[in-house]
Length: 101
Image 1: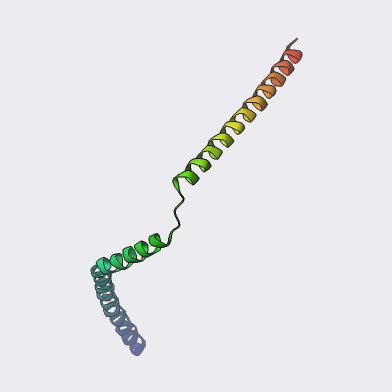
Image 2 (image 1 turned 90 degrees about the horizontal axis):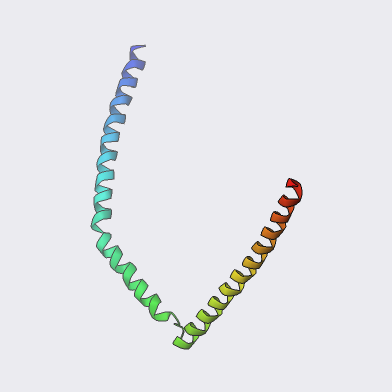
């Protein structure tokens, strides 16, 4: 019985010291990560600049024409929903009038 108790207490001591070393490893790992941040940011920005050079940008005329298409489409939908809403309002009003008489 004493041997089991001794093994258990030794296991606890080992796990506590293991937790301390894991904590130190976590802190040093975090420190390394923080110190490597500027280099990783530079790599990211370089890649971003390289990709942005590959982008095919639309011309001014293309942007203007697609803007006109979007505005006209929004206008058509606005008129459509206004008409549908007005029809439904008239139907609802007439229905309420029939049931309130």
